[in-house]
Image: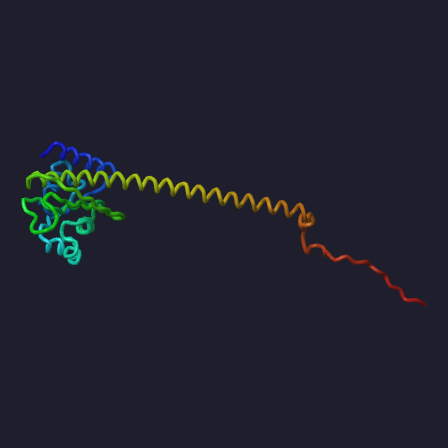
Amino acid sequence: MDDNIQAAAARLVRRLKKDNRTITVAESCTGGLLASTLTDIAGASQWFSKSWVTYANEAKISELGVEEEVLTSKGAVSARVAIQMARGARERANADIAIAITGIAGPGNDGTTKPVGTVYVGIASSTWANALHTQIGGTRAENKSGFVHFALRTAIHCWDDAMAQEAKAEVEKQVAIEQAIQEEKDREIELERREAAARETAPWQDEAWEGDGQPPSSEMGIDIEWSEEE
């Protein structure tokens, strides 16, 4: 195995282990080479449980839930299919992240309009999915190895970007919480200020009855004694 591929696999696995995440893969043209690369790393059972090699379109449909209409309209080597493969694998493996590879390794292109060496890699989590593509020139074996290397680098890129977005969202969430708390404090201060201002303009409101029994009547009156005239 190429040293660059092994290094990329190790980098991805370090991220999985750091965050205690699991991964699965769905492959077409690489025929299980990506799964083999990942499981060559000791302790793979902690973060890898299963994978799929769906070489035929029928397998992509039945095993991963790829839509037949998408295969017909976009072709097996397309971003839509790569994303659906990744999503299907992730859901069925109950994994945190999935990588899917679909491409044309050669030597022929099976009558498609896409050139040999074209590959699409789909990456999916429970909250996002993305697909990137590239074209590699080489023999069938070289293309398959290149596809795996590209898939690993794509996964690392998408992972780092997603983690950065999550961190940014968490910061924004905390800022929003702190702002809401401050706004509530400001409202309370303003309410107290208004109440104090109201007391100053109507001092009689401070003369509330605090004794026992009924409060004294606020009505003013004069006691008059009547006497009968003789």
